[in-house]
Image (cartoon, rainbow, N blue to C red; front, side, top):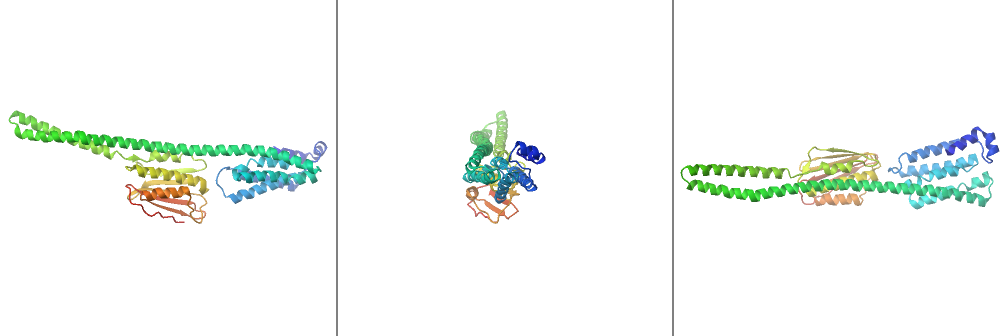
Amino acid sequence: MVGLTLIYSSYLPQVAEDEYAGFKPMSIYGWACYLAYGIAYLLLTHSLGALRKRYLDYLLLIVLSASAIGVSYFNQSGLGSLLLVVAASILPWILKLWTAIASVIVAQFAVIPVFMYGLGFPALDALTLSLLYAGFSGFVFVTSLVAKQQANAREEQRRINAELRGTRALLAESARVNERTRIARDLHDLLGHHLTALSMNLEVAGHLADGPAQQHVKQAHQLARLLLTDVREAVSHLREGGAIELEPALRPLTEHVPGLVVELDMEPGLRTDDPECAHVLLRSTQEIITNAVRHSGGDRLHLSVHRSVDGICIDAEDNGHGSDAVVAGNGLNGMRERVIAHGGTMQVETAPGRGFRLQLDLPLKRLPPSTVRDTA
């Protein structure tokens, strides 16, 4: 919309000079500045909020501001200040707060020479006009800053909700396992002991009874033994079914992650009877996804969860930028501590242009703490 005035002044120069004093037809250099502004704006806004190479963003911001000032210079107008107002909406997403505020002010003040020498305004008028445009830029900047904060709040809420859903599923599975274990224990302790005592008494009664009564006692003894066998099989079945299913806990963590497609490849029917192991897997998966969103710079993460020789293994790999070495932050260190406490192993690999790969192996039963390997 700002460019409509440029088109008007370029294709109808006589009308523009009569009705809008100070507007001049754009030269090829002015149109080049306008085109550079549009390209830089599109490159900066096509994925706001995504993790990218910052030095490229800084270069594009310089091109954006310089080309806007160039439009004012070659058109001898204040249209560049309007373009800078539009550009102010991008700054909160790329720069830190005080750096962005300084950029807004410096960019608007850089147009003062155009007002003074191009349009012939007195210095005070040029300063006042720049401050006016700076106020408009400030309003746009604050609006965009609030939008960014709301986006961050929504992402944090989504992450917490996903973690709560996973934790709730894990607690539900744990409660189910505990209830089955309690029922199995009660069946074994109460019915099993009583049936065993009944069977022993019936066996003694079979030796003491004579005639037709002995036959009935033997039949009752056989029935008691069969009933005891059924109880034992029921107890074994309850205990065998008392394992925690992992997919309902891990699946919610991978859904609807902004800016990241998470591919979960999970072995069907993967279970563990160790609640602590399930908890470590849940927290580790959440941390892997969070690190991929914040630090990898990629848009795809592949998660493979399968049974290893003596435990459960997570193999995660993203398509991010990678780095020369692994720099462990609080999240990675926390995951390392959980793995060590459970006796597992963890290995991290990365290289420039090859993304990050993390392999985590947890035993099904807690072992003494092992050594965690981090390699770059």
